[in-house]
Image (cartoon, rainbow, N blue to C red):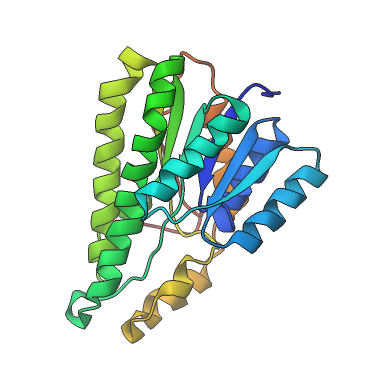
Length: 246
């Protein structure tokens, strides 16, 4: 059990964020849930508490630096520390560049990359002060290989992988802050619901044709990383559905 540890999870109202919040709470970790959908967050909090876990819900849009600061501060004010940050919030409105969905590009950069930067900046002073911590960034297979219609999405995930590795080099050996980049393949979540480009029918058909990962599969991988002994730094975890070739 890990009753003395505190985690902050973004994008915790559904999907992987909700699954990892439930899993950590089940392990005895106190969990601060952050997302935009307040009502859904409160439902997740109630379900965790009914299972004898400890959680709090904080409305947070990761594109707002003040929201990220408030989320972390709320956890510290209540529990006195923050040991784990799960940078999970992300969106995937895939589109071909020629479709010029520029507002969607901007939103992806704001959520997938700047949101991670804001939350990391919010949590670092506390981790440095307490002498350690663990930052988990939810990247993607798209951060390892590009594909048509994934130009901007892949760019945000490649950037996130670079940030994660540089963060590890800066903080892990010297400051005892471990860093993990989790890179899933196709997962059954709400991500594909943000796709508005009519030309993506082939991708969606392929995604439906295989058995995808479940959010709980990614939560299990993250649990392995954050509960590893202090001398073990799990830097990258790549998880694909068995049927996904690339």
